[in-house]
Amino acid sequence: MPLPRAITASDDVPSPCTNICRMNPATGWCSGCWRTLAEIAAWSTMAPDDKRHVWSQLPARRAEHTEPPVVHRRVRANEDDDDRNAGPR
Image (cartoon, rainbow, N blue to C red; front, side):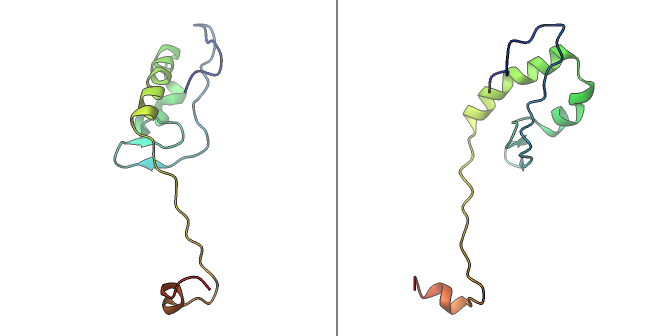
């Protein structure tokens, strides 16, 4: 996850938040931005160099642990257990 543009020491460092906020208990990272809860909570008070350090770690985290896609199961209204086990209609 590269920085959105070149960031200099005088710039504000943008948040990597993607508004997909779901913590993975196995890694301790958010599945949207790949930060830890501590990094997320401290972001607004972090020094710019610390923010850049967090940004530098995100690509490796993402590459190390990509999550499988969420599997959705289609359920029909008024379907009981016997109907679900009977196969397609």
